[in-house]
Length: 149
Figure 1: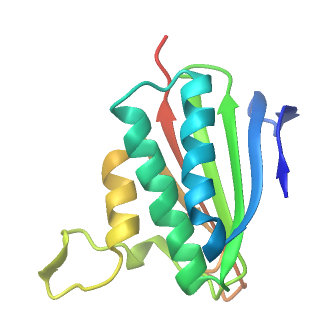
Figure 2 (figure 1 turned 90 degrees about the vertical axis):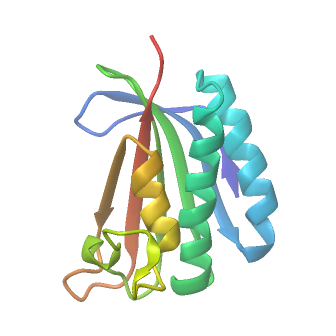
């Protein structure tokens, strides 16, 4: 399922929904292409756009591998200051807390997991993880990059 062009208001100001996509492992190449196209249309220029696509791929891959085999991606442009392009990826897996993301690069200090989330935290302007920490199933990982202007 792909939907686009919907205007939302979640109480924090108007948002313009650019893309809503249910995905599985087979959809990953298409997911990357769509995120890149919509990020370009929203005004996110290179090299930041490449980082945004990399972050979306990392979080979506995490959902496929650890969150039930797939998930849902919501991409929207947030109004206000600073304007941001935000991507939220949800899944139906066991959930996790942000404490699973290692402080040091994975592979250092004995950590061998969390590389995608660690990288996402490093290259994006905001990373928020909700759900799963209190025993609830599923999690939502949202990250954002500020748009120019």
